[in-house]
Image 1: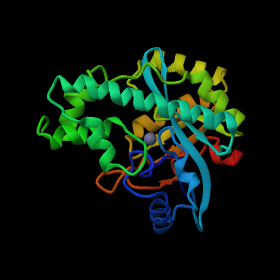
Image 2: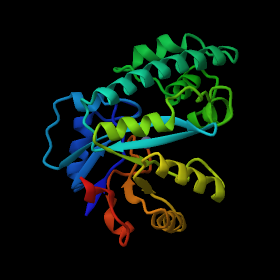
Image 3: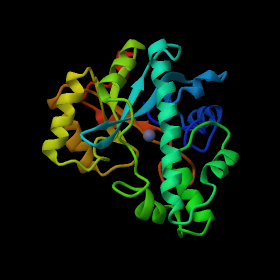
Image 4: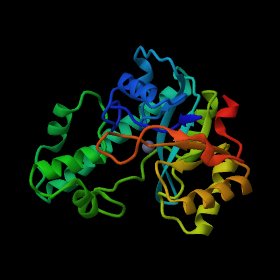
Length: 269
Ligand SMILES: [Zn+2]
């Protein structure tokens, strides 16, 4: 079975519209799809028609021990009052963060950042990739990788993350919305084995249910390591492409066979 429980539309930093993503999923024989935009449920405010099974979703930013962490909420009621309130405050936090990043990058020559980004985007979403593109457009960086390496990546001047809603508030909001919380791309945070285990224990204690065992194309060693952790901590396994655009090497859709032997998250929907 081909499924995908992690991908992005142009309601956040993806390239395709939600309908475009669904069309692509149909072409790629994806049977179940969740669009999980960063800190927004806007995709689900659109009138989405689909011949495939659609699961609602969102990817929420939080901070754990000063490390930026992403939690995917799946099968949520997109009209849930508590979740909508949380999303609204995440949006404000994102805007304030953007203002701060713009201010910090001004020192390095970036001009009119917010105005330029807002004039180019359809929605209210502003993320670090928008700043990366602008740094390139204004000739401050050679490409977006360079922009992240020098100004926006972990520990750099534009990496501001401490003001997101806490992990427990996020998990509670997902649960109140009838959904399940999944820890996104656990290896993306570059934690030591013992720190990752501490994160998993805390995530589980707070009500987290799933672990993203597969995120895009990944080394089989990593899948094996995460599969073992998934079993050890009795999580349900989630898989997703984290697809953003055709320019990326990641393709929409994942073969569910990769996690044979684990309890799949979609069994609970
Ligand atoms: Zn993502």
